[in-house]
Image (cartoon, rainbow, N blue to C red; front, side, top):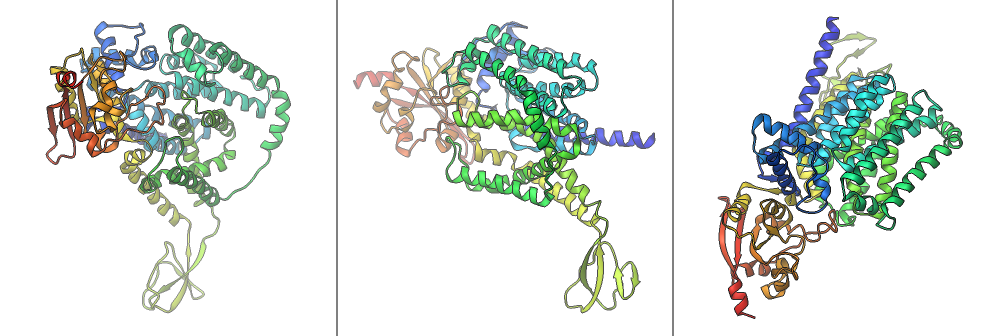
Length: 630
């Protein structure tokens, strides 16, 4: 009993430390930036409204883009609850709270991994991989509905798996499923296809299993509840549903096609069953080293493609390969786990079912690039089950070092007068661990190296990978997705504060998306979606149409806010709602930037760090000069 208690304590401490590590990585940007996340301004406006108005279940229109931002209340309920208890400011809530809830996905992955593999060691490694995965860290470090989407998605999958052994888990499953619907539409979609993949693959391999009818009823009820909530409570979901088919098919047609596909797959399940069972009995043995190297080769090929060609504006700088090395190595372990999953019974069915339809949907989205199911967004959902594959891969490699029956024979040179710890048998010295000496000594002895020595090296290697991942997580993501579009430092924030205190809200502010959305939350109009020539033309006259408001699209531009991010990394936001995932920034040349230091622009505010690495300018537009120049 004492041994069990000690083991339980060790497991608890391990998961606690890994969870704290994951939270630390996710909350880290909040200590450097005043704004973190391009949509920060939207959530600031909506959270402020929910908190100030005391709203419980009342959808609010977004200040920009999809009205769906204010129609999924789970995020705002949490903010209201914590605000009422702590009286923290909205800014502090948005920066600190989401990363903490994102970290709660880590122990959930532990329980899923342990349940599927019956190994707490694999569960712990799976949790560690999720904690340090750079894509998971980056996406869930920012304020957003997706934080609670990921949380309730994984919680629902956990309860779904447990419900197969105990039907009492259907109650928490229903509660977490409904919470998921109220949290995030994209996560709900990912959950729908994940759960159906699990149900369908289980049916194909195990036949008409005990829970099959219950799970189908749950699945159909959940999808009906999802579509009902979307169509009744979230007006923007009509276009979200239609855009999945590039707007060619109306929303009701898309829903009809969805159920037709589901019913068709259920109808042909008996026909497919016999073929799947034959395939499932095929056993292809691949060495751990081969599956690891093949996976690395595949991933490196994708990275080279992104470096040389790019995909839809997503391009990686060559230095990105260096930052990505620990990430790529962890993917190598995923490859080993996929190869070895056949040893884990129903865990194989559930994990392959989980990723199967996600993978098919990813391929479809990559081909169509429909704008709502953005390909790279699948990765953050795929890396959740992949972390369990990675845990299996590490465990299987480590275990393989323990089960070798005989040692490896290797020859080493020992000095003539130095003995080795061991016994001398027939002129040979057998010793472990191995002893390494210079080749100048000519006495040759046979030393048997037990594989346990390599277990130590492998453990050290894993620790190094984890430590390097902590350092490279954000630099790696910066090579894939320009991080500068997501943050505002305190120095840059001072420009926004100046406009808030001194600006006239009858005029618009020209700036980038992350600054503009926050200014809109403060009641100003911003032009980030529409201004193009203002940033890259050398004369204000070339941008006069944009300055005047594009024929009433927005009020006249009265202020221009430019910071060091915009100057060095480009201005993000142009046509943001049309191409949210891959429109490149607009770069300013020296001449296009210098025009702001001449009429009709006047410097109203400037601030910078001591080393000038971060700075912000606020310019006032002199409309008297413009009118006199016509």
